[in-house]
Image (cartoon, rainbow, N blue to C red):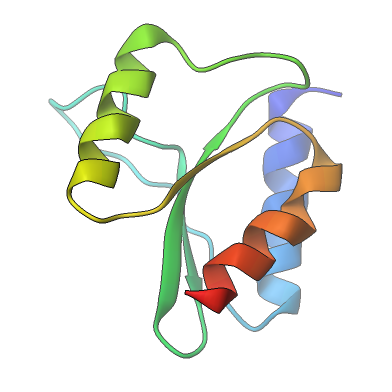
Length: 93
């Protein structure tokens, strides 16, 4: 399965829960997560999407740590089977 397919399944799952999952683009600040998940009730989190078995690049890991230090949740999604758990965690916060 390709990264794009995992990303599409994430978008569909978020939509099914009544939320949106826009592409997160940050010109001039590389390494930011791919998607921001916005769910009803002001629940949100950032998701880095990878193909199954792939890991974030060092710059991405650095950006994720920075965001987590600032109090934001960042998740790495590398397979469709993890989508439900990630969305459950986002909704629980």
